[in-house]
Amino acid sequence: QVHLQESGPGLVKPSETLSLTCNVSGGSVRSASYYWSWIRQPPGKGLEWIGYIYYSGNTIYNPSLKSRVTISLDTSQNQFSLKLSSVTAADTAEYYCACEEVAGFAFWGQGTPVTVSS
Amino acid sequence: EIVLTQSPATLSLSPGERATLSCRASQSVSSYLVWYQQKPGQAPRLLIYDASNRATGIPARFSGSGSGTDFTLTISSLEPEDFAVYYCQHRSSWPPWTFGQGTKVEIK
Image (cartoon, rainbow over all chains, first blue to last red; front, top):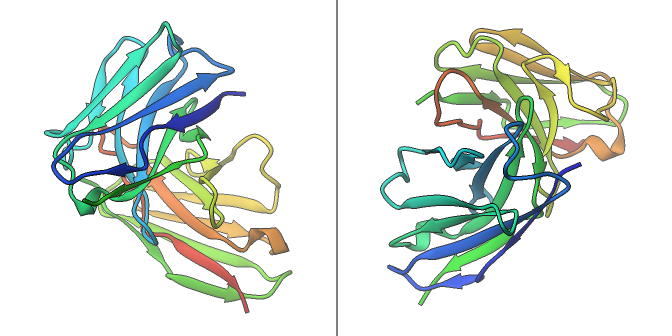
């Protein structure tokens, strides 16, 4: 059973960079069995997939965010991270890290709220 | 980008009743369709993958069907803990993976 836990600042100023980390336990980010994703959910709205990273370091991003997103792996800490640059109020959301195993996001973190405001 | 449209937006039912939720894709996703349940303040939970396969630990009252562009999630007899928002998601061909806008199943 993979367990995920997000961490990072809950408040980010407009135009700055949002940085979040997902700590993984019960599984390895070096495993070829998993894809590691970030997903967000604005208040009262639906889910938006941001992108994923594979154990090889290969990444795929949502084209709508691609120019601002970086997802990276830290195998020494068994974690992966999200950076989203030039944030605006539209980036205010609950941010989830999630793990895709066989098919679909089988494991999720509890989510962390991020507000973009000066 | 594949657009997923869920209907209805809200379903008002009583415990014990049957719930039928629909998800329609803007183009074929074959059987690469996933269903999630989300309760307030919680992360989504995987229910069904590849259109009709129940995830580990999911009760048999949840079933999924469909292929191509039209999919259905059925809850055969609603339990009190089933009142929640349900999302579909495709994982067909190439990203971006997209989600439907959700169907809220509420107590009538």
